[in-house]
Length: 529
Image 1 (cartoon, rainbow, N blue to C red):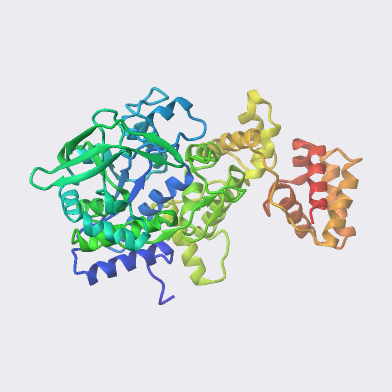
Image 2 (image 1 turned 30 degrees about the horizontal axis):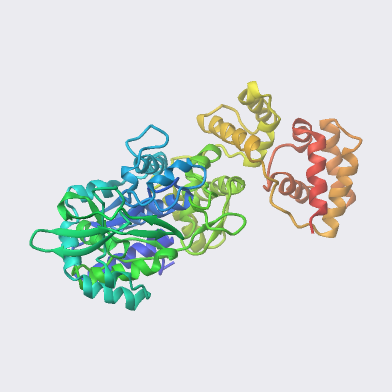
């Protein structure tokens, strides 16, 4: 316990490392800013949200250790469109290489395509209760936020070009400046090549020559012109833009995905050696994958959005997913939501002493995880906990015009709820959405030979017994005849049917949700190897 930092989580350890580094650099601890980049080129997914929520967790941990902190959410809405994400209108292809902040919103509800996509991520953050300072890339360039840094970078472009080749093998920036001007003739950005920088006037000369984006040739219009950095008619390359942002905004921490590790390596060097700003402290995180093992991404068309999570699960369950750990890849789909809903409930039980943890260190860590999941403002008392899959099964059986009433009646008959609190009603709504739109099978339960016989015996009983009381009594008899303690047998059945170790009185529940449905679930468990 003596070596435990803060509340015992990885967030506390990371915050301590950031503070110690800042002290070593002899920089002021009056304010430590952390940053998260918000993509605006496609529909944001849970991985997009993870970066911002984890950065907010670091902000909270810094503050918990006595250091004022601020999260900056910087939206990359000056990036050019590289590919039309799956599911969006194909006619957006005419805007390839155009900044997303200057593409019309295909949904017609925002000022631009970039504003629409960025609003989805901000909505997810707002609903989760994340506090942040928003920065738009388009607005930042227009108001000259990065002019000083851009001038320093472009004045040393030859040196930077050589370093980029040395660090990444990329030779592109030995022939062109790390800056993309927006062509004043065709409006494209990546098709232009910056040929010269005039430090006296702050102007960049360019030629619209064309480019290749993901194997597709995008023709340039041939126009030659120049733009002033202060006009905001262009942007720095990713190889140097992060460094400019860090220096301009005094960013001390930013995490990154391993897919942009090379860019971060270059930006760190630029910050340290060109801009004279010690690069931020970093941690590298892994990607979220779908169930097939593919990276979840807007271009792949396998997007799992935060809004979809919120349709089936609480914001706290999603925050828990982000805060459990930062290292390692995770396969994720809507089918996993019951797991995180129930895990949050168990975490709450541990926090309020309703569930025991033997290890004091583990208890401290889990309590800390619960506190961070509630953004260090935990509730005064626990909520009513209902196994998610139980709710899903009940709401699935409910008549469409009376889901709430039917579900409450069943839950009260199981003596699981009394008053219909807002939290209970929310969970009924979420579980109903999941049950009719997702409803995956419960997690596989590996049965021993003795357990298989006990489950098979219950199936035989259910083939001829359809009354709740008789089923309840039969479960006790099956347990007794197989030499299994009734408590252990009920837990086994709950795991098979609900993916949980507890649940309602099984006789009435089996009748309410359907005897045939229960038999099907039990047979499926028997077939698993």
